[in-house]
Length: 336
Image (cartoon, rainbow, N blue to C red; front, side, top):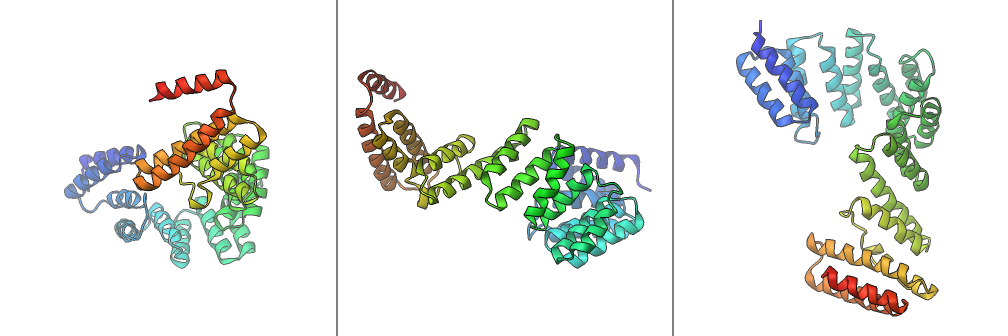
């Protein structure tokens, strides 16, 4: 029987795992392994860590760790479930199904297992069977039912149905943060970017510390900007690019849209809105500065682009009232 020190090390590893300190968690588990190699929890948590960033290199490691945990404890339903999730991530549907069913055989009360079996059936196109599994998750069709259904439908790529289900869940519980995020991702997949942005703003209001909401919002702003540019709505496109850049300056506008700020500035100058034109050109300059700093463009390309922007900026400044031209000149001097 394993000694107390082994389980203390496992508990420490669990806390480090929950705090996303995976390197220290592995250190503790390695120490526990040296003390007693026959404790299934050691391999279970090593598998959980290997599954954090799944790729072609870590997948077999994760599966091997969970398998060893099962070999040491045949009724370890949590290990079956986690191994099933790894299989599902790589579309190994038969292996995933077998593991989820084994987990439920050992623990029939584990409702989440039915959700994953429903997801597998949806991926196979068996909607009716998927719903049969989902009905086992909850006897009442409350917001949790529709939330789970929305998640399953989204994961299966059925975005319209996912939006409908998640909308029902949110109508009953307006504090479902992940509900807004999942529905936003579904809207994004359908290129309904306005609706996606509204849901992302709702998610951020509820959980402003979650970085993935902001990163997704920046990407959606860019997609909406490109959509508008393709329609010829250049100023609106530039405005959406700016909103995205305010969140994440590392996003790449792309060659096809790199002139959007200059084009928007030229439109503004034709309309006599020189102040707005200068604003667009300032963002154009920030973008090329960032591209050059990150090595995306060489100095020759950077100099050519900056020359074009400077030319347009001088033209826009000429259209400003005298007082604003003086202020602009002073700001440029002090900025240097």
